Image (cartoon, rainbow, N blue to C red; front, side, top):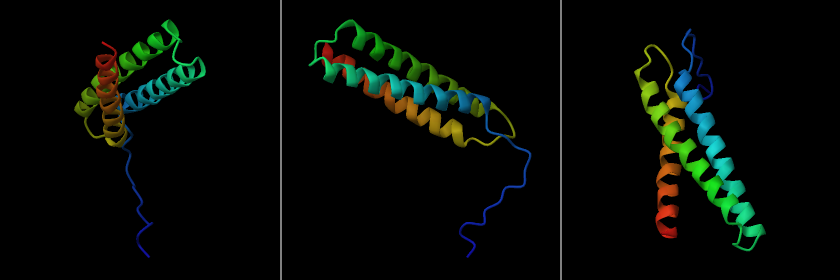
Length: 104
């Protein structure tokens, strides 16, 4: 069964920007999740804490998207984490813009 025997004999590594982008996406998702938790815990009256976590999540996601997209310029590397980080941060950025527009 050759389905699981996919070996890669190469000296390529993941891109640094992809690793940073994926990490920033995970941090943005954690900040957003913690903000939602605080909002539910305080029955929707959390105020400045939730707003600052939302802004932090948006900034992390926006910068992560930019770093992830710029990491495609690195030569002779694997781009899996670049794709994952860019996609995750991009979706989270668009979602956060939607949340901010609903609040206005």
